[in-house]
Image 1 (cartoon, rainbow, N blue to C red):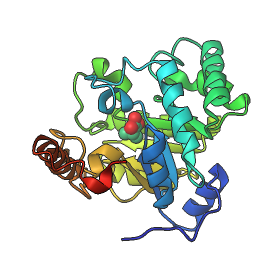
Image 2: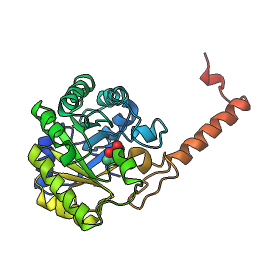
Image 3: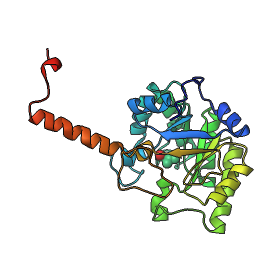
Length: 272
Ligand code: KIV
């Protein structure tokens, strides 16, 4: 197991660019709270994403659409308090940047002011490019997100692999270049063919971080709760499970219940 405690210098958007330039892969994981963020940061992850997947993972919603600006701000603030080294990126939730660039920049400023995060992420290319430009012009670093965009699930109708057809692949490549030209510091590509993701990573100078996008990109991101086995009933091909914490927690809690029922807990040493 690798715990990169030796490198405590803060990760910046500039350092991510340097990592791409020297061919060092970027590691990114989600976190939604202080306790988890501390563990993830101390284990040496480069980028912590306060993803709107919190809508599913933390709130039990079917999609990412219901989570609100204030809820993302609450989570972002908690995560930032737990992090010393990683770059913290917070997702702009559905409805906070699609209605126009003025509203987008106002929401982005509120998120940055209250959370003290390092950067924000939002989904989409050409359709949201004015908002992206406006937010970056306000001094806020933006990470783009293309391919499968969960906030558009009602448009797609399913969570299947995106950009398998030429027209969608060409639009994705165009959008990736537009986001880079607009000033995005990095791009997430979700669930697209590995060859296309590799091509995007080669054609862009900014780091490209994949989830279900193969190994030819500049870094990888996973949802923490999936990779440590806390979630269940979700096993896409791209997900590698590094632990089965659900079983460990289930057993520990069952043990506690037994000890309480049998009057084994608390014992003499565990009371005053
Ligand atoms: O919300 C999220 O967790 C994400 C990742 C899947 C990239 O956007």
